[in-house]
Amino acid sequence: MEKKISNASLGFQKNILNKFQGFDENDFARVIEEHKERYVVQNEQGSFSAEITGQLRFTASDRSDFPVVGDWVRIQIFDEDKALIHEVAHRERALKRQAVGRDAEVQYIASNIDTAFIVEAVNRDFNLNRMERYMTLCYDAGIHPVFILNKVDLISENKLEEMKFEIENRLFDIDLICTSATSYEGMSLMKVTIEEAKTYCFLGSSGVGKSSLINALFDDQFLVTGAIGEGTDRGKHTTTSRSLHVLPSGGILIDNPGTREVGMVSDNDGLSTTYSYIEELADQCRFSDCTHTHERGCAVIEAVNNDEIPEEAYQNYLRLGREQAHFESTVAERRKKGKDLARMVKDVKRLKNR
Ligand SMILES: Nc1nc2c(ncn2[C@@H]2O[C@H](COP(=O)(O)OP(=O)(O)OP(=O)(O)O)[C@@H](O)[C@H]2O)c(=O)[nH]1
Ligand SMILES: [Zn+2]
Image 1: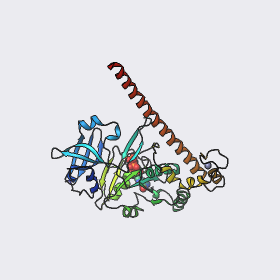
Image 2: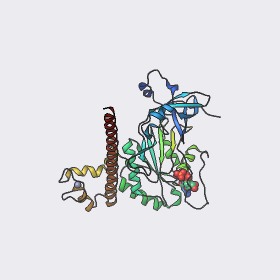
Image 3: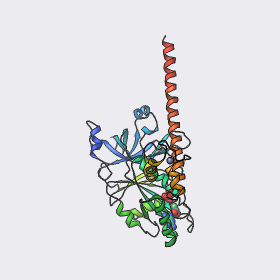
Image 4: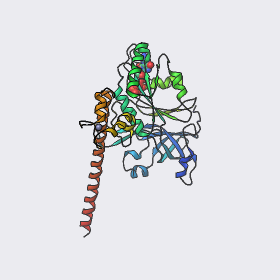
């Protein structure tokens, strides 16, 4: 029943082998499902139910050492359909967020992603601030963002034009595809943007239609979506774990649970890419360390006052920047606490050895 898929179609790149002497392609597989304590990995030999080795569990310094969907892992097959995961072999362009309820801990969402489809629904979900947030997250990870405005069947053409105008005024030249998973509008455009062996992930709140879009891309009902009460547009939360699927026509899709709270864990220049038009102005501020919040001679504030920069974009820029700074300082604090503790342990040992 299982269809064999080549490693290349799963996104394998030969340079992954460079780091590993004495191993070949068969020793690696891609994580396609993540469950509690268990994974499903796949390569061209098939798919395997996999667990991490005790060694990996023991040596892992934090959660980021554990595999996530999209990772290439080094495996050892030990049964027809079972495997052990020795280590994460290749992870780049990973989406991460601040772990819920845990200050300064990063949680990986998925990895080795080329493009993110950032899905918003035209009705109750539409939110430009959130779009900028996702965009920043993507730029930060080196992932190309493509915006999907879904459920266009629910609004008039005029209303849609208004929204597109609003988006283009805020986000400038971004990629935008308007779709309906119900009427299939825009689905062929979405299909042709998807390339063989490239990995796409779906981001967006619960109920915006991520699973429905994936279904439509597959042309058949293979992921179950919660169709509740015909006539309502409120989605039921259905996606419980992340998984990766290869389209028959090529291209790899990663479904994601609704990511309602996306904390900024930015450590790269995502923010300055999203708001390049703001940061470019900073050169003209009177003070080189201008925070663009209250300073006299601030070129950014002036541009906001002259309506050259949308007020909401400016406010969101400051908000995301504050969040990022807060995250960075809690990370620094945690590191310091860790170091202090290590020093204390050392001191105690030294005292004992006297
Ligand atoms: N009218 C309309 N309804 C849609 C469209 N796309 C999805 N829906 C409906 O919206 C609801 C939620 O869709 P899902 O595909 O489950 O949403 P999701 O984003 O995967 O949600 P989670 O799995 O919770 O993250 C379902 O009832 C779908 O039938 C669309 O283009 N138009
Ligand atoms: Zn300034």
